[in-house]
Length: 397
Image (cartoon, rainbow, N blue to C red; front, side):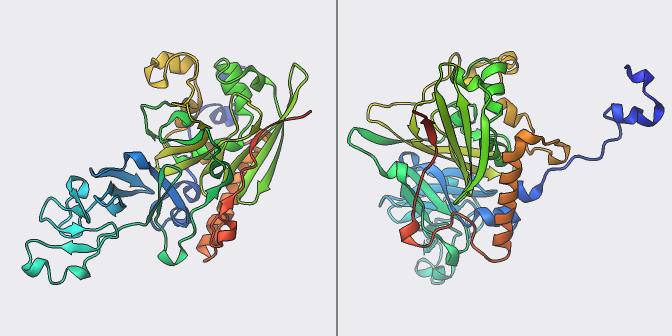
């Protein structure tokens, strides 16, 4: 039926005219200080940089909507300070790193890695009131080749989680870390993904895009076996959610593929080459701000491992716009939702059950924080510090 034959009362329904303004769900997407999600996120440790890249030259770092600088003083201690100097507001990005901290280029005030003002060269006696000045700062720890930051209430600071798969490094193995957009469909030339963090994180609970996007639509991007439509069971995990995707393969093998999305932004995806056994790595979808995120990964690999395996063909950054259109991947599907997906426009279906469950659970945890409680995955007991990884490709015998 052509548009001209639609009766007048229903004609508006057949076009885009007259739609209400589209909106995103701010509770799940906006991460700035004081926002519900921002306060939830600030109850956890976040990977913020690769340890080997934090040196005695300050680097800009934007995290949860805050502009910071990260550096390593000459004693080897990492520091994370607000970029705006507490004196007259110039950026510490142009500061000089010294033995005990970072010195502002403007008037030479020196701050240590915990924000204490150690010197004020233009003031009498080096600043008689310098002890009253604190440059805003955040605690850091280093583990698995990553620098981690805690940006929340000091009296609520939890233990940094350990992961059993990363603790079990055997002779001949090492921990390999990345901080690029590779796992979001980009490549190692791009660090920041220009869309909201949720568009990537919730994708982990969507197994049905794998046989379509990654197998039939754009050709086989991982393995042909992913073209088999799975039978999926979603369930809550101790600190988040997981799904089990069962496939009976053409060669008669049967496999359960278990994938996890854990709080606050952990993604544990088994080998996309369908290698059997437990997942060997952990990923974190770290919000830069409301419209950008960064991915970090740490994985157990053989000593000789020297880089992530590339998908067939060109790097993402080398492809033409037409190639991105003809052979899209996760980047195109997720960034293509816009800077922040317009949730009011969605029409969720049965295959989106994992998305619905994950969003509901996320909002429950945000509410717990608003009411003064501790969300899932926040650890205070050292006996619970090691997190168990249950993800993997498990073949039936």
